[in-house]
Image (cartoon, rainbow, N blue to C red; front, side, top):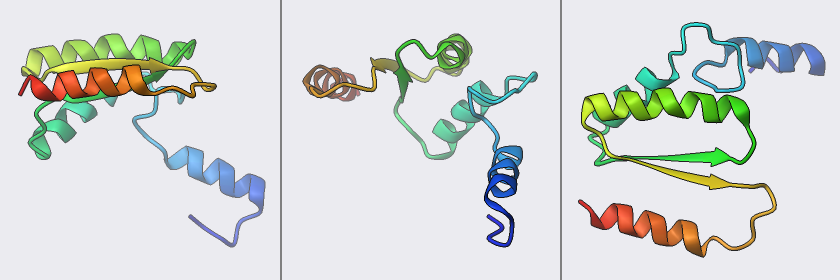
Amino acid sequence: MNLELEPLEGLADKFSRMDYCSVLYDPEKKRAGYIVDLAKKHKASGVVVLLTKFCDPEEFDYVMVKRACGEAGIPILQIEVDRQIVNYEQAGTMIETFKDMF
């Protein structure tokens, strides 16, 4: 991050260098492959995808991420949350069950 930039220019600079984010324009849709590559690189047993409810870009990308993980033989778990969530017990149970599958 360039601290010499004005705040708005700094924000624009940051966004112009971001990659693999659902909400940013990416006609090549590289995020799914990136997630699979990360899982393989770190020898992950599975992938947990945390989606924000009603975030269309994340929901659209999930289809590609799920397909890419399936083709790579990597188990995947989707957890959908909203911003006002105060009880994480259900998500915790889902993650524990997913972990116990390995």
